Amino acid sequence: MLDFMAGWRFAAACRGEDSAYFFPPSHLEERDERRAREGYAKGLCARCPVRAECLDYALTSREPHGIWGGLNELERRIALRKMERAAAAS
Image 1 (tube, one colour):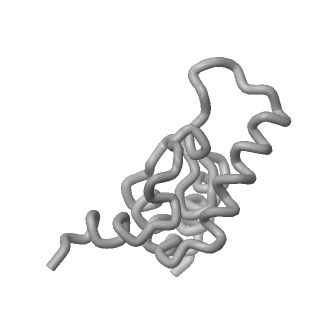
Image 2: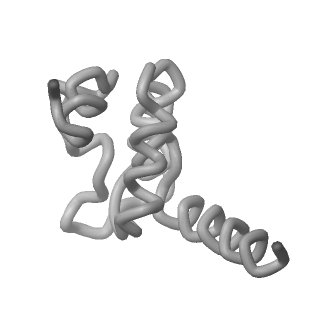
Image 3: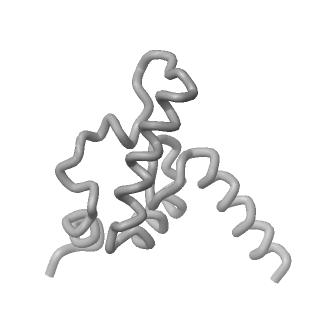
């Protein structure tokens, strides 16, 4: 049996894709370049059979960089805040 990490990553739509689509470059990126890069990555995520597992991993591990499960860094921080507020309200 494959372990948790290898299992979902093996089935990911991004497997074999250039990681440059999922992570910002080391130089300052123009807004249009970022939107295009993230748009391509999010398009792959949209059709990924393990998108939920990927996003769960990124949220659980508090992954600080890149596109994971179709969300960028800011979108994941917002999702985490919402989850924390919901848990505190319970």
